[in-house]
Length: 54
Image (cartoon, rainbow, N blue to C red):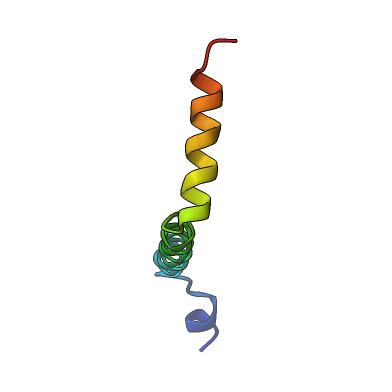
């Protein structure tokens, strides 16, 4: 009986699934944020300012 409780087979796989799902959720959130016109304009301005010669 105690052997079954101490067996952690598959625990690493479950951790990978949780980490992958968290990453997918975060990526989805970034996609939603980056689709807004305001954010796109701010990012474009930042890139233009970084690439401009003073």
